[in-house]
Image (tube, rainbow, N blue to C red):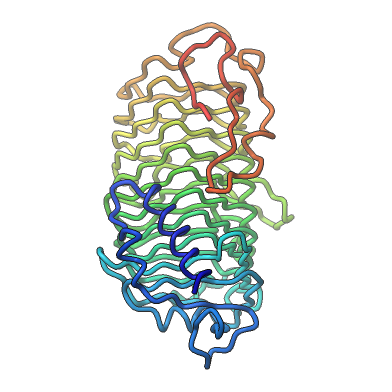
Length: 404
């Protein structure tokens, strides 16, 4: 049991530091919760103890009750059916699912039939996601999810914390939250190289919070790169989302040689729909660079977007695009460098203290470094982004743009 207790202390302690307003059980209350252990050499007929672990994550999920902690030992878990989470925890007793500290857990959805949906086909709702969740009050951390029909798909999910996940090389978006979903926190996510052959690149994003509603959703410390469509997509989500300390780059390029390529390539797509709902999303201290289209775009959202201390660099489209008629966007202290054009604003937007407001020439020589190797390097052991104190920081000390 010593390893199980160590797991609980590490996972719940980290969550308590990261989730801010979300209520997490104290270590004292969590210590009484049973731990369910999964290992690649386990047996689903076993007790699920450290000495007699289960074989599949699904079996552990099915056994879990409010307050339980599921500890997954290192290895690759090849799925023949997706992991479905349908039982909720409670505010005082969330259910925890995570990798043993220091061990790499890979959930591989390559064998799932929905991963290979043909061009023009649709994925049945229940088969969306290597990890498919319709439940609340979970704490999920430290998993690497690959080759799924979506990596994580969460619909009708509330009060969850997703921390230190990696979702890559999936056949749809790496992580998608939709439906009636509130008060979820997505922390320190790495989501990359996701693509959608069935739509020739039209919809696979790094992270999508779309087609739904729900207040209190937060994205913090994510990196979203080399996805076929957008880094972040808020298409038709009607409630405000907070995004901070997040980076999107290299999105929207046809690395898979899809015919009739349809990827968009925005770093941060902050709306959409016909008509797009007016929503006051907030993006602060975030960077969008080297994307095929815009760095930050309202995508038709006329709401009171709040973009502050963000940086756009080297995007092929517009760095900051907030030009939908009647836009109420407020842009403050943002920096555009070497984008196709710096900014496109409607007459109704508010713009102050941004690089284009300050005047002068802003280009690659205006900043201390344009080398992304620091910010794209290995995360800290706690999931934190690597420090990059010079990346895209104005050489003259002007207090605009993001800082990492």
